[in-house]
Length: 170
Length: 254
Picture 1 (cartoon, chains in turn yellow, purple):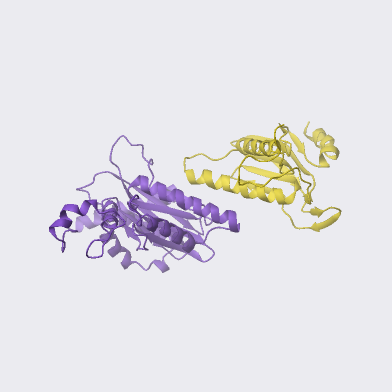
Picture 2: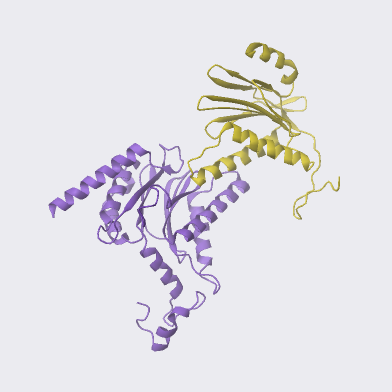
């Protein structure tokens, strides 16, 4: 590997970080009438339950929801970026709206791109959506790993909830 | 018009005066010529009502081959900002692009939506900058900016000089302004304003000189959730129907 710094002359050097204020698991599953995501409202500061009214699930456009675990400041940046993308697409006024799969693809590229610069957004994301009767559920994380499934779980939920969710959804 | 009060020399050279030069009587010809581009374009009006703002455009259709609803003259600069332009369409799009950049940059810096008066000022300053240099020509557009922020609905107008203007621009602006002055816009609901806007556009349309036109209607109000959008089809169709009917009535009176 040639260099660890970003190529733009004006961008600061950034390297692998550690998450500071964090959110834990996000769970997701598909069901008869659509999809559902679940997450608690806690942002921890290490072992301290620091912020107890945090919304870790957001809507993106008219058809998608995204849930984040991991670093909350990175999630806030992601929220802002996704909002800009939605606004930009809206301004085009071309009759198109972003679908859940579009949001998933965008996040997947964003996250993988950051990991490749050794400057990740330290999050694991659950992306769910419903459009024209089609259900969508996916996962993207800080390493750029992606997959779609009828159940997703991030953080500790990946270990604890996955077997339970799978049994229920089957 | 520009030859009034000027000598023979200026009549010969008037078309070569760059934007960076004053005429002997203190005018900047290039800016005035830019206004002409606006005055030859289809009318745009804006109405700031009690709970929202309405923009309406007389979009002249130059060819029957054009798909209805294409080449829109009303554009979005952010969720809560709408812009209607009169004049050179390409200049209008370029200006709206700048408005979009300003709105985004404000959001990136302050993490909040740009206030109406701020975006109006930024766009106005940008337009004015193009009147300073000989290697740039002034914008051949006037713009009406509709906004909705914490302070409520806002309507701002910008002309090629960069100055603020009234709520009607383009070909039929004189007639439109007269009609608009009759309205007590601050007491209208946005639905009533939509109907008035449609009526006025139909009233200023010159059947003889321009045949086909499309009516573009947009609003930004409480009902739209503070989002700039094209007026919902059912309401827009109703407004257009009423506008055509009122025009019929007037013709029958004559």
